[in-house]
Image 1 (cartoon, one colour):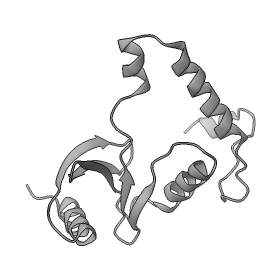
Image 2: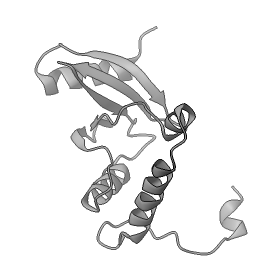
Image 3: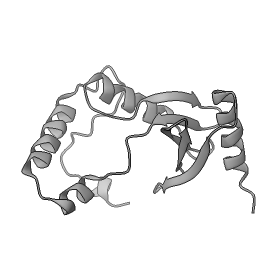
Length: 145
């Protein structure tokens, strides 16, 4: 079965890299219409995000990623974007999760680092990034969807 979106993503990557010397594998699926692929090329890997424009808007993702990076948070850098097609090429942060690290050996330093990052994120101003403020206390109507 053919996948027209994956074919279009492959064509876009061929144009970006100016050749076909890369391998695409599924990285993960999202709880939305987005899909993520790992793109390996010349001993470097990237993440390609496929977000169909009729279903997903990539602009908030880009805005938040840039905002986090400018605030010193390690978020994936956006290497290339084609919003008309709904494709982003992102820095690959790897596939090691916090949980998998802790299951191998418990280390309180990981928790301390995670808490420091959360405090940093919470202290970032959202005004200049045009990000909605979700600081309203618990609201049952808001949570009943």
